[in-house]
Image (tube, rainbow, N blue to C red; front, side):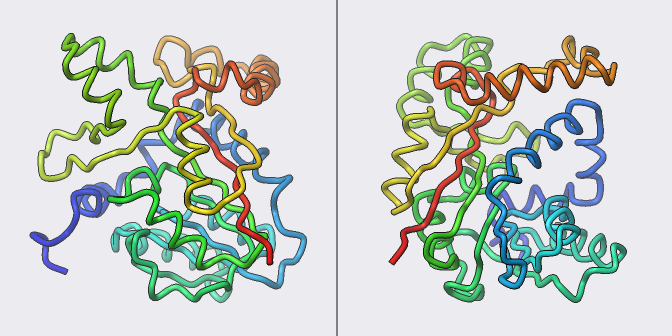
Length: 272
């Protein structure tokens, strides 16, 4: 695929793949990832014989966790550079025999086998970054066995309001609230890919319209430790565990979820 024909989301992730992990290597993201894995655990399949999907796999962080837990994993990403990083990391882990790799847009998963996977994750909002999130969800559903679980994150529309207040334009705010669309804030205009954002209610509607049963919507994170002036609160390990207890409780509170920067949805494909 030539550079001119690459979607903006692919151009951006191809460029940053080499330093991507370093951008997310701090106390907040370790706290965030520990929460994420804890939220995965109750939904992981009991049967290790059926492979699982890591959608928008990036450099392979969640694929490696799933491989370490005994699953075979298919890694999917639109960025060839990200797939390359994931493949290298999994080879270094010594588990490449249980991994396969697909460079694909979530809106076109034709090369990925149908009804072959028992579980899927889509972390880092790849569905919201797809050109048509509803179509992406329908494509993903084709790949999962009946009754399988998909866990995905979306950007929370309400979490972006402060940005538009800082911009100071009521028209920009009104347009954003109507469409739910914003873009990745990279300086390179050709890499400013669209991001579809959702309120908790809109997220539920998106998944249900695509044919899923929504089992759970969590906020992640409700306590915004990602803000620079709050990150220091996570430095002490004892305090960090106490903050985690509070965060887990708030993440399930239907009133608190709308405060979070991201929404994490647990959805189930139809059973026959």
